[in-house]
Image (cartoon, rainbow, N blue to C red; front, side):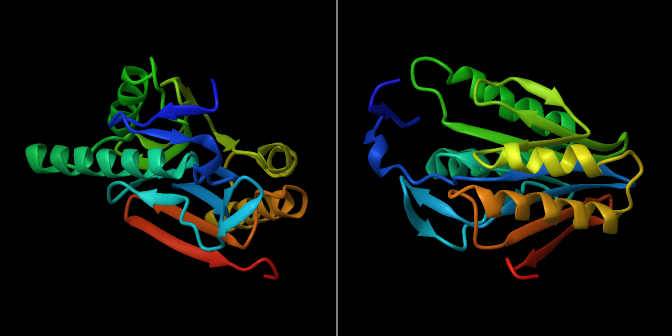
Length: 216
């Protein structure tokens, strides 16, 4: 891809001025829940554009997704998927299954793959009638079901912690602690990751957010 591209609306933009999340995001399935976590830094090249970026977003009462890549592309997709999830709920009277949310997102990404793809990668997690589910959704619309995963520039460091500490049946508290450690490991090594950790705990009852400073 060359030095400029187009957004979904067709407006050109220079890559040098595209706001990006950097980033380290991750997700894991634990007992009766899904944990999503991310750092707080957004960058423009090597400039830290924000120290308070929100990289995890609820799209329904029991499904949330992380963002990595172009902030503008990711925000557009978050708004789109949130609206589609709400429409599903209004039409059916039920919360959308995690698989449905993932498929809507993947279809939009695949539809736009040529000639101007979204510059994003998402982790989608949630709980429905079939249990806790976690998916890695690529910018091309690819879908990978996972028990744990990480995306972004710091993912190589986060994976080291996840590979060592993850096991099936972790409690929510153990999952939150492991997620925090994994993002902190990325913060200590990746210049595009930093400024704190957000953790979302997704259960059948809803979504709870916790935040931690780099000194916690």
